[in-house]
Amino acid sequence: MRALCLLTGLLLLTACTDGEDLSHYVAEVKARPVAPPEPPPTAKAFVPDDYQPDSKRSPFVHPQPENTRKPGSSAADCELPNKERPAESLERYSLDNLSLRGTLGDKRGLSALIRTQDGVTHQVGMGQRMGLNHGEVVRITGNEVILKEHIPDGRGCWETRETQLVLSETK
Image 1 (cartoon, rainbow, N blue to C red):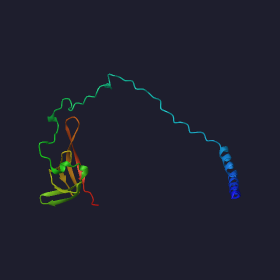
Image 2 (cartoon, rainbow, N blue to C red):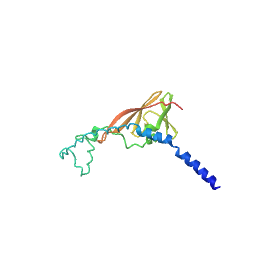
Image 3 (cartoon, rainbow, N blue to C red):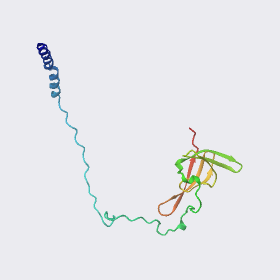
Image 4 (cartoon, one colour):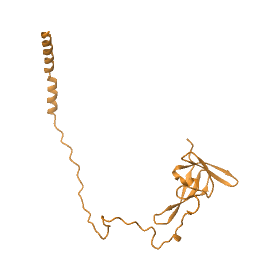
């Protein structure tokens, strides 16, 4: 039994010592030329900005809010939306969340079918309101609804713009 173990150990040792292929491969890898590393990217030169206390606000003081009105302007100069009237049901939704699904017509004119993101369809006529920007329906055609919206300009006044909802295809 002892002789069998000794013979098996000798066979394993001779198999492990025959590493000529491995030593040849290691010598070949070490003989390869070494590629030089890529040069580091060039850094931009830092140009400091001189602080001019007269032209810029102090970084140690909280900024003051801008005036909400232009000098010399009053509320009479601006077109303002009517905030006294009660809000209509479609004024809770952004125009992104509303889609025109069709139009209906009779002798009184066209009315539009507007679907909300909740899946509820509303019938809208001329002069009705929709959208978050006080949008008023000013025209309805076969494939679009034109709205007049009031957008705040950030200075206390409101600008008007026309926006349209275009007929969307059913999926």
